[in-house]
Image (cartoon, rainbow, N blue to C red):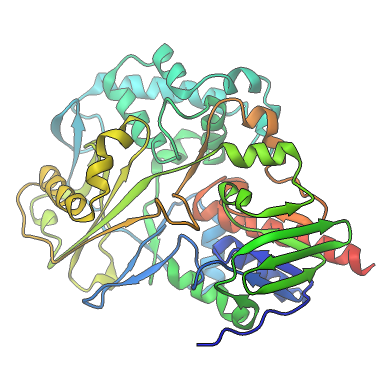
Length: 456
């Protein structure tokens, strides 16, 4: 198929057709701006991807879960008429592993109240510190330099002795792009505050979009159909006060403004002329990309419910979280989703298994049995990972020590005609789908200001 030619000019070029870039482009187009979206892949959506299995079942390879606190995705879904539905977790017992022992509980830490109390004390202390970290500019926290000089592990070692409480903290923070020993304490406190502090964070992601997040992507992209140019990775950007020239594998586009809606770790792959300021360059180089693995198992029915399980399993290594994601569109079948955050020391421990797709699937099925007991064999098992994907590099991001307090102000600061989108730049939440959408909204406003200034 012959690809359409790129335009020679546009008002704004958006780099990246993930949800952040698409939202920015949609808002700009609605404002009458001539926008062009260039995307390296042969599809839109970025890490939101629809997968149709050989049996015809539609699954989400990327993010699909929504929390009560996620205002941006809820507003966008409402605007586009995409219903938000609860996941299948219901009443019954949850399963939690505590120091290798399988516990059945009505609520977390019912069987280990001392660990629950220790975790509560730890999260109260973290909340108190996180509340001192401004969401928009965490580098201006009164103790920013002090907290950015230590890892989360150092704080946990000094303040949390109970193994169960430590495991509970790990289960939450492991999904942030790194492990205790890798993440800056300041970064973790910032993220905690951005999530709404611990009580809100602990509520987690209890809903999903009917039809999947890929349906949301399709609806956002629909009015942009003639403005999106796929298979056009950006290789070079020339920028000056008067605008930008974006060089792709399919040609070059001249524009008044540029929205960069890709992960910071991908930005150094572009040649910038002139080079980006050292602070921005250093920030991009320091981002950790998460190595989370997502599993999905499909069964003829949700058999664990008949056994009295609510459909939630926690704490088994490496599948730290197992959740019943059965929804109305599963038409009687049962669906379990598991998450394995392969970070820190687990990278070495599980690397060989997770690098072998069939071995990883087998391990997942075994761990489903560990959580919920004997059951029928799954009809289908799928593994989704962004590790090694050249246009993603991973999922979820984190920062190590000494970055946020020093070069953090470069995160959202425009550079002449260049403005930054992408999940990491979202407000108030600084990652995941929620952060990506809010970042796209903000970046569209900043780009519109630059187009207006150029027109004036």
